[in-house]
Length: 291
Image 1 (cartoon, rainbow, N blue to C red):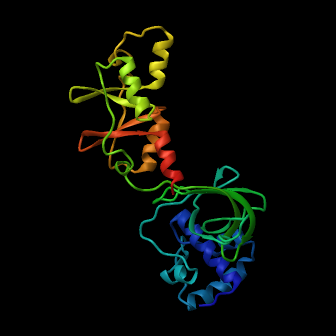
Image 2: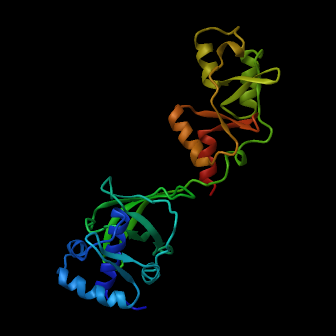
Image 3: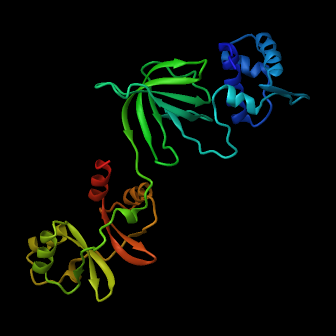
């Protein structure tokens, strides 16, 4: 179905306003958004009703509502349940707006990476040079930042240069840990622990007392102890006793949130309640860079 530019503008505004107000939308409200005469909007609505793209709602609170055909005509997927993908303009979130589709337009260009985002919501405030941020998306937690270089009001789309794009895999953290984690006995000397860490090229490891994990020790802990001249202490005397752990089924992006919240460099990973391994911020960076 081929629609005129004004018809696309009217339908896009109708969907955006309905998402915001959850009730029938009057022609005057649409006219104000698209900067058109209310009479022009009413005339167009008659044509759109004949095409089955809008339905009229009578009464004092009446107006117009979109139909399922409206979404198909605008190439939008109608969903009973959806996750809003937020959009920011110059660090301020655009209320009642969501990214419906993101298309990369210059993937083969050696120097440029441009994209177009199809928006459900009001994009009229976007101008060239504005900063735009989209995301995070619900599945892979993708966040895109860039600079606006154009706007298509008939398609309700924004063209922008991608300056930064980050995405974290959805895989559970259990898939990133070592299957045979290195541990250090609680009764080990500083020298013994140092040899274990250096020999395995790791900065820290869980401390084990018989079958239980009782803490974490790092080369930094050992260095501070040696600097204080306390060379006779055991690892159980210098380890960090506060243990922060995550479940092995937790997605990687949720683990990153735990790191930021707890302000730690390492987390224990448990599977079915049992210690399964250790994950560090460096491990996560290595995994992301491998993609």
